[in-house]
Every structure is written in structure tokens, then in C-alpha cells.
Length: 79
Image (tube, rainbow, N blue to C red):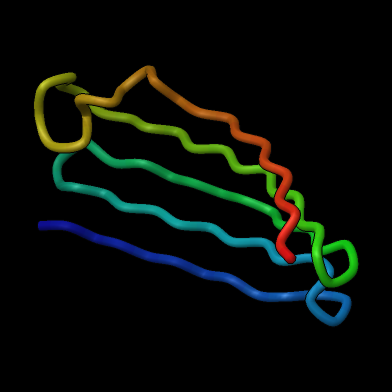
């Protein structure tokens, strides 16, 4: 059985956009990811995201990524 969820919203007329994603594969593997995006004007965006993988068996389901947690920062100029 797999359980997947996501939630997102915007604040301050789209300046701030937080999101949370997650998946759980029974009995003990999954991940949780959260990010926040900032929009500066019409062309600049910055995004910070954190992903935490977990699992009991490193070679089963998404547990293969266990202990490979991520922190990302991106800056985008779109014109």
C-alpha cells in the first residue's frame, strides 16, 4: 500500500509559496519534502527545499535513497 500527499498555498499575493509533499510505502519506507519559493518582481525567484528519505531496508522501495537527504537552493531569472 502507498500513501501519497501534497499541500501548497500562497501568501502575500504570490510572493511566498510554501509546499509539503510526502509518500509512505507500507511498512517502513518513504520521504517528506518541503519547500518555500519567494518571488521578487516579475523575473526573479528563489526556492529553498529540503527532502528527507527514510526506510528500514536500503534496497527496498524508496528506501534505496535512505541517508541521502537533500537541501537545495535555487535562484531563477525568467525573462
